[in-house]
Image (cartoon, rainbow, N blue to C red; front, side):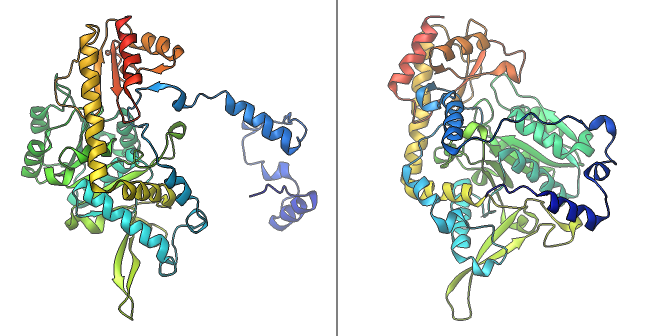
Length: 447
C-alpha cells in the first residue's frame, strides 16, 4: 500500500469540516510539555535502487540463525520448514484473503480453518480446538479467564515452572485482580511442587495452570495434579511451548486437562526475531460455549453438500460487549494455515518421527556433555528436547564467548532466575546435527 500524504488543500478541508482553524488548535488539548515544536530532520527522498541498497545493507548486519550452531529455545524453536509451506502460503487466494466476516462466501478459508482445528484437537487430545490465537502466552491468559467464567470463582494457581513471559502476560490480563494469582513453587527435580498445589487449593480456586513440558523442559505429572484439582471442582489448564512433545508423551486431554493452551510456532513458522507466533487453544466439549476466539463447524447446505460455517464468534463485534469472551479481531489465518500445511506434509507418522528424533538428539547431547565432566544436570525429572545444564562458570559469560565463535549455546537462566547464574537451558531440534553437537561439546571441554 503506497503512502500518499495529504495536500495542504486536503488538510484545510478537513480542519474546516470539524470546525478547527489550524493543526495547532487541533492539538491544543494535548499538554504543552508533551508536544515538541521541533521539525523532524529527515533526509531527502532517495531513488528506489538507492533505498533498496541502503536497507539491504542494514539487513546484512543481521546474522541469520542458519549461519550459527544454535541450541537456543526457551519458547521459540528453530525447526526445519519445508519450502512447500511458503509456496502454498503465498498463493493469492490465501495471501490476500481477510478474516471471513461473510463466512458462507469464504468456503476455502473456512475449510482450511476447520482442518487446522481438527489437527490441533487431535494432537492435544481434546474434543475441540478454536481457530487459533495470537500466541501461547495470551492463549494461556485467555484460558484462565475462561476458567473463571466457567466456575464463577476468581482464585488462580500458576506453576512457577511456567515460562516467565507467560506468567507476566497472565499478570497483565489479571491486573485488576492480581491478589487472586498465586505462584506455586517448583521442586528440586524441576517439576511443580504437588503438595504445594494441594495445600493451596481452596473453595475460591477457579483454575490451576501447569506447563508440560515446562520451562525447564521437564515433563509434569499431569494425571496426579488433575485428580487433586478435580476433587476441588476446579479447572485444570495445561500450557506448552513445544507441541512436538505430544508426538511422544501423552497429550493434555489424555492426562486429565480441561483446557490446554500453548505456542504453535514450531509448526511451520520461522523465528522471525520473535514473531508472529501462533496460539493454540483447545478444551473439552462441555466447555465449548465459553471458548474465546472463534470456531468453524461443518454443516450441509440445502442441497445436502458439505459446507463450513462460522459456528462460534463470541467477539464484542458480534455480541454485547459484556458477553464477549474475547476481543481478538483475527484468527491469524496465515499462521494457522502454515501450521496446517506443515502438519499435512508430516502426517501422523512423520509427526511422531520428528518428535522422537528431537528427544533422542537431546538425550544424546546430555550424555556427551556429561562425559566432559563440565556439566551437571540439577533437575532429574524426565525431559523432552530441552534441559538445564549447570556449568563451572558464569552462564552469561559463557554465552557471550560462545556467540563470538558462532555458537548460541543455550539460554542463560539468570535472565529470569538470578539465583541460576551458572545454568543454561539447552534445546535440541532436528536441525542440530552431529557437527553442531560436537562443536558445543568442544566448548564445554574448554571450560
